[in-house]
Length: 173
Image: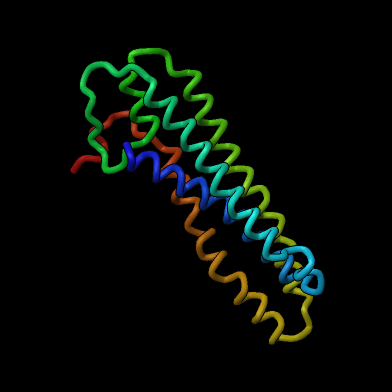
């Protein structure tokens, strides 16, 4: 169960930090002269701490709600990762409220950050395209390259997170 808790905590933190990083990159590329005023170290530390605390709280709530479910039958999960939907399949009671909470949290911590990331990168792309100097375009592109590489992997991770096989034997060799 520690795997379940830590994996969700780090995953949620990643989604929130990616959104914060996209805003940071937007400020660097589009509002460079204001960057030092907008993103001072105290604000950055506060945003990072808020991301970690929000994800810690969400993970704790999800973990607690899942652990309160009464389990019946075979209580083993034949998967590499212990996921909430798989535990809900073992529950002896109606899990609609737990599922609603899970989907709501997924929306808040996965879809909303994406809705913040996409507009910031569209503004960054527009700003890079109108730059006259090739050196400036290269620097702006290199600033955002690693973040964009991580963002390109996120849809695959989200698809895995949101997909739960109907048959628990599906992932076994």
